[in-house]
Amino acid sequence: MKSETALISPSTLTISSSIESAQLRNESASTESHVFNEMRPPTAAFATLGCKVNQYETQRILERFEERGFRITEFNRVADVYVINTCSVTQAAERKSRQLVRRLSNQNPDAVVVMTGCYAEMARIKSETVEEAALIVPNPDKLSTLNHFLQAYPQFEEWLKKAPAPPTHLQPRSRHGRTRATLKIQDGCNVYCSFCSIPYTRSQMRSRPLDELLNEARQLADQGFRELVITGVLVGSYGEATGSGGADLAELLAALTHVPGIERVRLSSIEPTQVTPSLLNAFAENPKLCSHLHIPLQSGDSQVLQAMNRPYDQDFYLNLCETAYRRIPDLAVTTDIIVGFPTEDRAAFEQTLQVVDTVGFARAHIFRYSPRPGTPASGFANPVSEAEKEARSQELSERCRLSQQRFIGRYIGAKLGVLVEGKEAAGGLLAGYTSNYIRVQLTGGSHLIGAVCPVHIIEPAADGAIGEVE
Ligand code: SF4
Image (cartoon, helix red, strand yellow):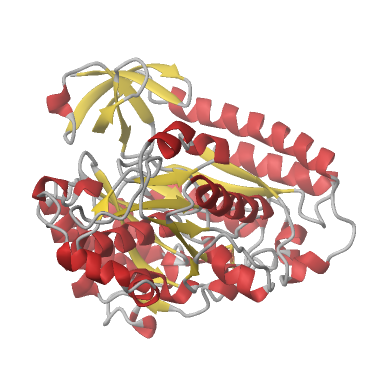
């Protein structure tokens, strides 16, 4: 599963590459008074570290606070409650999770800092304490964070009873201005890749019923969302055996494309062995399914894949991509790759470079391996040095950058549909994505936001392309 950044909505914050980027404003914490005041509703702010599943779950937690009467505030403002949905996918993610809890607690000593998510679970497993967290909600209970919170702090119940309802224009503030919404369809992973701690923190396999997902999709369409990004821990496991009520993934995706107002459905990530012929057929035949498959490679070397306990080899991956390209017009294949796995020597790393060149990834997320306590790989000998990991990461990034450029270059002069998402913070250009996940910047008025516009792709740009609305 991959971990990535997302747009920052007004009221939630996704922590990306560094805590520094969280832009916690010391000045706001120190200059705003934070006092118990029964004449205003209590305020809550939310932050997410890690993957799209976490982002989705934070949104659900936030909505429950909002429905209960809390006023949702920006994360970098003073709030009465901070909820941090943490990540444990790497050592760095755990460190950032701890740092964020501590920093918030120190900056806002009157606030209640609540920690949940994968690191909350991992901390319990490793018997680590994060004293600055006033309340830790176990990961499996995270969607009930509000209940845990109100049980631990009943005075907020009293406060909510006395406070006036928040202005209706603030509800649902968290979703305004967005054109893409994530839809989590399942939870849990039972693959047990040797490097990954997720099956230990999210072991229960559960698919959400089709009807429930269609209802949520209709609500999202009513709120103005045009694209659904289908997410989960192991989305390819979606099916009857784990609670879908009968539908498999291909059937679910097809059903979602029929929801009025939904123009696109994008799959966020799927394991190679779960890309079935029926799924490829669905993508080939349904223009509302985005021409984009994110298929984690992790390594291009078959022996490293075996040591990772990944259930495929290099040939399988290459054949899969070849078939997918043949079946799906204009397909973008994006991926995740780990460098510096303990059994990855130079020759194995070069196999990965070779696969990158052969597949022609449209985008790649590169992670430097770090051992996760309790996983089989953490006991492997001969780890690759940090300096070597850094060198391989840079070499691979450059190779992936060239691959992305080649992919985008194929579309210079072409006309593609772009779902316009909003204005860039710098420069004021509009920006959005094509079905095959090319980020396009273009000029035009705000009335285009939320529409799929026909756009001529004019020239490449950093991390995307420049286009012109037809
Ligand atoms: S165990 Fe493997 S498939 Fe499961 S979440 Fe981790 S990396 Fe993904």
